Length: 479
Image: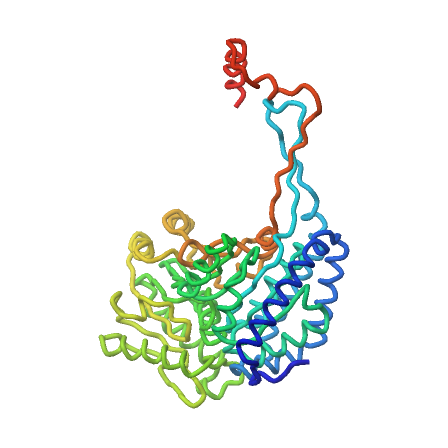
């Protein structure tokens, strides 16, 4: 198994290898297209067994990259992936079957159906924050749909990337699944090729780069991006419950989660109580000395550590107040769970996705104020509401737009394979997970079977006589 994340071949060698693999996968697409549901399920079962076999190795690789503990790796990386595989195994046969659809009266005698065929050769570019789950999850759907796949994981988690490369090489030939390690040069070399579909997970900034490259080949894309996901807490919320869920959702993986709560909009009546409850939860989860906790993840590298530090410094220089946390250890890329009040919309911390353990808190007086604030920003990937008021909940749902929403919970919607996952505009394009993931990597091909001989359409062939004009008028009543 490949385990040396420091070895990289010259870019010219990698580019040549990429082109060879791409052409081999192109030549292999017809064979993959003709695979049965049983054959694809067999691959998924083998992949599930492979993951279980290498579970401890994955835990160690991810820990080497940014000190994520084994339990967090199980909870946020391995178990969700295994759950997706099980869901696919149980449903793939039904999803692959042609779907009969109605045919209008004007096509009397014909029949219509949708068949699901693979898109072809697909590129998956995955991020560093959940390096295993966000690489393997789209891979599962690509395999289930019958595609050949090239993977490009992040260079910021090299131990995990190298480990995944070795894992996949045990099971798949390169003409079916191949993984390329490397930096932006490797990604650029891949994006120059005419893939049939690109699935990208990352920032909106890089999403634009991917979409621009895809446009050169008119390649379809699924973009899972990010943004500032808000949390609204109304005056009816169960504060203890809300605090536990917000603390977990925000600080798991040290806030490096695309759907992590980015900022709180808290009703003035419960703000102080909520702040104290969150402080209590931080101590309960990670202890009084968070840096000593074996359960708290580090920032992935120094560049991101300095980025978050600068966001916090700029905010406090402009009047924001740190009311919890703020401690940092540069040598460990450690930033403690931090609560921030007195923030202004002009601060960078309120303009950029934080992607770290800093949680700004804004006071609101009603749901109108909260939804109007959210509406001024790009549509978020996720939105969270805490409260017992159905009226307030409905108001929020009716006056906001988001890729996904949880009521009295954070993050959990991503774990339901029957819910689509994805963003809106700046936070993403397209949906994935479950059936929606299968569809993302499939071409829904329209097929119409027409009878031989006389058809309703033949009644309308030229020349266009008065009699045919009467037939057109008759047809207009049925369309």
